[in-house]
Image 1 (cartoon, rainbow over the protein chains, first blue to last red):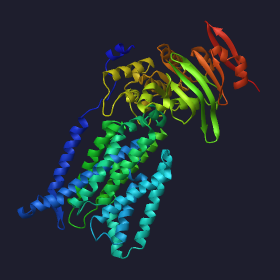
Image 2 (image 1 turned 60 degrees about the horizontal axis):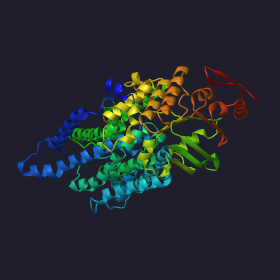
Image 3 (image 1 turned 45 degrees about the horizontal axis):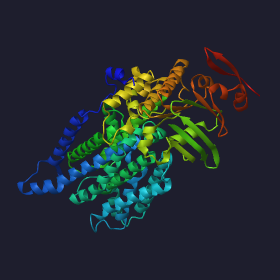
Image 4 (image 1 turned 90 degrees about the horizontal axis):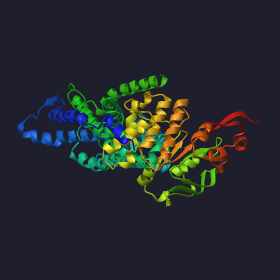
Length: 340
Length: 256
């Protein structure tokens, strides 16, 4: 081989893998965690520090720590699954809710409210959410089949989203009382307030295997950059990659929605923020997107606590207010690039 | 040391694309797979690449392909599809680096050996100057060369290419055909689906003519791409000659 002369001309692989993104993202995340532990909120507005020495321990351990951990888990899940789904669909406009996992989870939780089971035990609500997201995944699989092409899967996801939205509306329509309807509506807006370690313990065991499934698909996502046939010829069966990502997303995003309600746009926005900086390799984006998703969610949640006194803003409202214009900007830019 | 196809058939639903095709393709050959549109050329290539289910048996060095594990198969057969899609704006070098994936374990980063293979593949396709350019900013011809380099970088004993020269200018068509011929001379079995019978006649060491899903001609380019065969299967009358000892086959006018 004539490799010697080529190698002498210097390495051609660039940009190389680098730790630089982590050097910036990890401190950003640690800073977010610190702020989240330090800043709280009462009905009279934001509170800095832990207040009276007598309550400092419980405030930190029972209120702020679970809330911080949950923001980290949920934000990380949304960032990771957003990056993975965009890689799988090879479309930068994809987001974790696309395939029905979030709306399924939301419906599951709403049904728990509807049947009045939420009051019985705070665990029932997230369990209903998880059951809902699993049902949505099962429906997606049976609609699309094992060897389905991605267009069929996306269309099946849209159908599931529509069905879940219709059933959610039905539950609202026949809500036992106006108060129950309001409770359902507020829950769906997405929030980290008043969550406890129970929620963390419930969500984490489902999120972890979800993350593992997504990470197992990472190399397959890289191979898919060249299309399904080339990916298969490189030894990465597209349908394996596909169901690893879809299953992992359903597990982890389903668990996230089950404990916090719908927090939109984090999974869409985060990969876009990182691409100019880290590049477009689907695999290289996964870990940074996890960290950035967690950091973004934490900062959004801290910002909520810093608002002036009054009803607490819901996290899902904040992420939607930031995310929707960003999404619009992406679509406009996408259109311009295609026109050019 | 050969790729053997025995009674290979490909069906899409009720339509049969390839029927009972048997071929014995030795290492070190540049085999041109030619034939009119819809003859089953791409389907046959995909069957060998393991991308479509097929009837019959395909073996490499007497080992059945379907019994190989997926990475072993990927290290044996490289496949370059017709479409030139690259879904993310990676650099040319990053695209070629994807060809090294079958050689890397989970979490393993490309090493010096991989860098060498990537540089060498880019060099051979005259794509070295493009290494740091983003593929979405390359011309169609430049991108085709980068994608062929990606397939070469896998360094397999069998290389399947589906119409590698369709979007290239004449100079780069000749360059790519030369690269494929060089690979064959290094001992690789190259099977190329070609529409350009002139280039097939000029560069291939063997031509397989497919029509209606069957092999209707197999042998030396000049014998297979005869005036009679072109008239019968392509419905064209060729200009046939020799230039500097090489065959010239030029489709000249269509036969009504």
